[in-house]
Length: 409
Image (cartoon, rainbow, N blue to C red; front, side):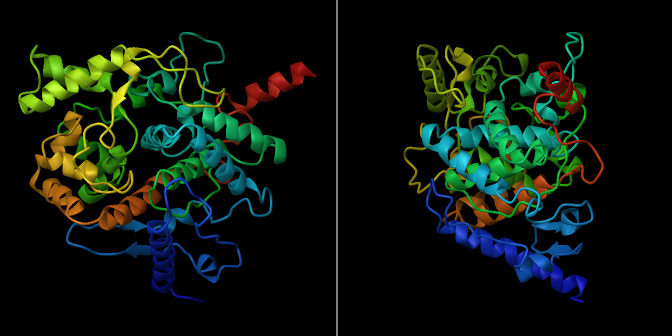
């Protein structure tokens, strides 16, 4: 039997090889990601050991036992639904070809789900059973601007056609998010599967525990630390703001009524303040065409739903090869963080040093750290075995879905 320490290093090699391959993976392509199988000797040697790639910041120190002791394995659906991951990947590729913002939408949806009680698809669930007085998680204020619900439902419908009642919504969200990241130019990382879906949603916890755009660095680090993330992992995860647009409604108070003062954030440089105000005012007069039924855009968007992008709008002076490079961190060093919480990463000596480190190379360090942090995020407090359920419809409890099917008959 291979020792625990040795198997831990095999696991580390899997991730490092996956990420290394992803550095050569061009934006918008999923075909070149490693194709691991049950026969792969590296996968078969993964066990509940501690993977530790030590550094002065404690980066990438986490217990890979989550991937086995909590019941997750690689290629969980190899026998019960062998086409599952192919279906997720191909559907994401199609949707991304139509709407590039699908990747950022799913990344945020995934983060909001995993941050509350773990990666259990609770954010997708409407467990009100028609009771209007019952508040559900997806209606909590931090979740009201989430996008991508229809994308997960689209993938779920296809999987239900091929493998009814087999693939959980939690696994679909984890896989689709990873594939969206790769399509957007980000790093590949392995996803272990076998998650099951929560039977309830958590409105009050989402309201209280999702990090806010106006949180200071102390508040941000505290909320992440409660989920087991250290400073380096937190700074790398916030680098997900590299892609997509940040809604102007999250920026508005910083521009006009910061912390209830009736004045803009005094730390914003005057030229940057003027630029952000101009951009959001222009967005208010912009209309958006309707998209396809499974697309991210929707007809008749509110002005607050338009946003500002670190990549396309405010970093034009920074050379950038893809969405997942150093431009987010370079923007922070220039004092051009869109969110107060983003800019606050430069207000703490340790996180500021990490920002400078990520901004100083070609993006390799950030991409590696981001991949490890996302792998860790995907394994947070998962439900497996007999816990939870596998929903037939990602927005409805299993009992309600079965009830609807019996009525239809």
